[in-house]
Image 1 (cartoon, rainbow, N blue to C red):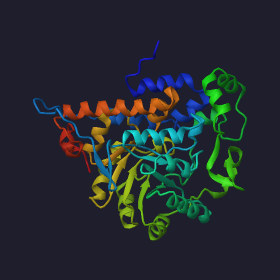
Image 2 (cartoon, rainbow, N blue to C red):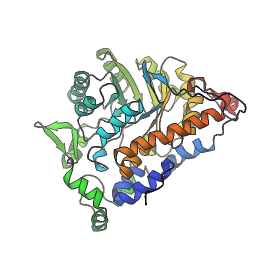
Image 3 (cartoon, rainbow, N blue to C red):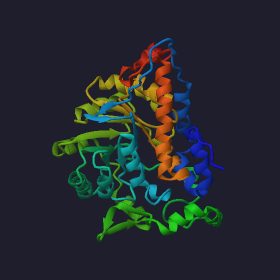
Image 4 (spheres, rainbow, N blue to C red):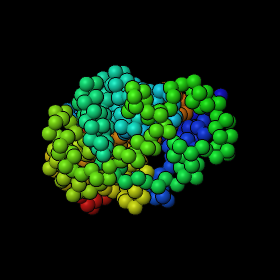
Length: 384
């Protein structure tokens, strides 16, 4: 009997059953006690919307502009690394799903699939995340590759200056180098579909970078990261990038007014209000709690996007009402991919789209571009 999937939570349940425990925990887990992870969703859930009645909501318009590009849906896909753990063609599947949904896929600097492959299947829907590595030549090479692939938007990974402690992964000894505990190896053996894809599909590599003309292997990733992680990167790196990149620049991980104003001064075109889905720093507020402060500081000088915690179409309405130009999803897209393959990603987009239409109609509007904080119950009391 076909599984009944009516929301993102259903996709998560199926993904949990179909992935090895250590792989699902890598996807679903976060830093330390996972307080920020929970707050991201809980704070969105606790916001209430004002219902309006007897409004003509027979037509819905979900299109908007992001950095001068028209998208059919204000929901993009966040950059996520090591996606081949969940499906051999993960990055390509997500990029194609973004094309079908009429939106954007952001390719991760930590991807297992080279940027060039993804840009080829989604030439007008791919943005490239970059990292400011200690070896600046690696970063410059990545930027040059993005330009050669026709990418015109770079997303700076601003929130990875220090490493995080993800305790679920530590319990599994999940660090790309150590052999998993026997219990995890036995558990993986009970997931035949995943195991078959793992054995027969694209090899799991750090494939966006190469060593001697071949994809970087997972056991080479640790030494590479140790040598090239750059806690010394600063806004001066963004300014340098601005001086030689003619396309758009987005800075991901901005959570404060001060950093927003610095992004403006450094020449960024947009920021992503993001706490990395709670995976980096477990002592900060949720993204929806930080969004009004960032929007106020941006003051129209740059666009503001938001990720982390979005599970419902009504969550998107809340974000846009508080000033975001668009939202991004991460885990929900992978839940869909792990649960049902590429068609599952399409289904996640469709579920969120349908819920978005309903929520928009319930607040008495037909166009997402008309949303403002007047639709938020108590919105006038929200600071920012």
